[in-house]
Amino acid sequence: MPSLDTLLAFLGISVLITLAPGPDNLMVIGQSLARGARAGLAFGLGCASGCLTHIAWATLGIAALVRASPGLFFAFKLAGAAWLLWLGIQALRSGGTLTPAAGTPPRPWPREIARGFVANALNPKVGLFFLAFLPQFTDPARGGLTLQMLVLGLVFIAQTVVIFSTMAFAAGSIGRLLARNPRLGPWLDRLCGVLFIGLAARLVSGEI
Image (cartoon, rainbow, N blue to C red; front, side, top):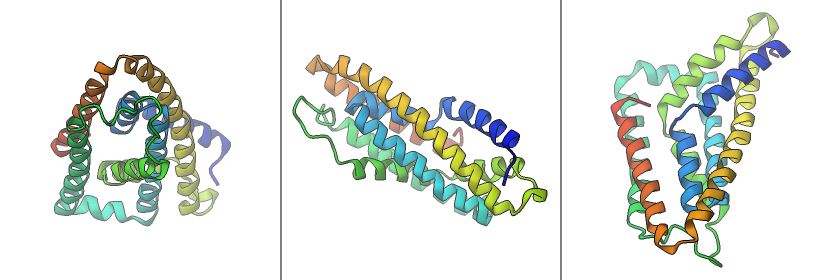
């Protein structure tokens, strides 16, 4: 098991990384603005749970294989970008229907969580980040490295859930204020769509 000092240092750095502008937190904010805190929270939980796949890849060394194969790495990038592009086009074509009107039942949580999970799991750079990040906080003298990396990964996921939840509720409150004007509904969805498409373009270009 990692020492307490190691866990605290890892937690502090993880918080800073999660707060830095990136595809996951930007998507959580965009979803919350367009469809409310509930949708953003579910999407954020999906992104956080998607980290489980990257933690597994890092602990098993699969991410190293992806990094060693440029073609496979590029294929994963294209798959992730295609998913973000599809979400963006869906939002742009909604004409405001993605923004829930008063009395409209929200989209089921499992569906929102699945969307966030896929968006995170299909980003190969997240897997490579964990592969490079987690081992730096392990110590062979303190037991199995696999267990240590698993514990560190769960700590990362826990703080991600807290931060994404805070972002979702804050952005959702702003979204409710904006949505009181029905004419803003389509623009909120367009903002969300442009955000997704922009992230897809950045993922293909290698900037994220």
